[in-house]
Image (tube, rainbow, N blue to C red; front, side, top):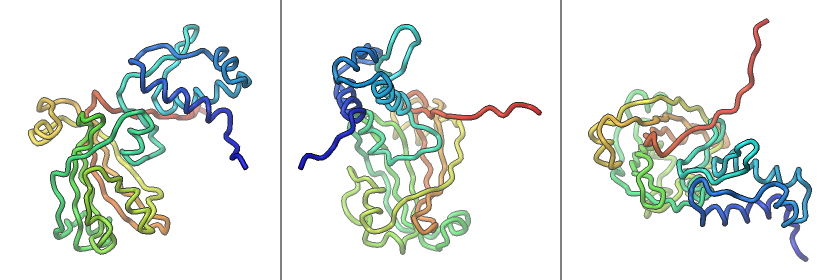
Length: 236
């Protein structure tokens, strides 16, 4: 029995493969051309392309067409993927360089938010195609991740390891700010001190609502961004 594959998914995957081979701002087939190539309705073709627009892989120019977006990684503010999955969806190869992994006593803030006195700290430089994109410091309740994060973590997806252990990252809260790169940021990310960073601090909870990860991610501003969808509230 052959599994059914939605037509929009077939179009989406085909375009992903093409995007990976094209330069930024290269044109992609029009909706009409996709309709002819895949024998689908204009609505199906437009929907497949719109999914890629929302992921930041392509952009539309009214009256001109659809084009490959620059390699700046972008995600929507209301949706968090693991860094590894985020980069793979953009046709880029994720990797990491571990710069610190250790157990230590929790700070007052960590104890309050994670509910523990001992934490496991994992600090990594996150890369896309071997280019440093972010400096990430993740703090976990040590007892909850005992035996889960003990192995090789250079190329690992932490979300994947947690999920495999029955700890499913599910929801959370993040605060985002703009900051200047410190000397440490500059050294590890290969940028100038004072360069703009997008800094995200978040607490992630698992499927039971329990705190599982307190993370600070310091993204190179020129390489990473957030798309925000919103509704306009009119004055009454």
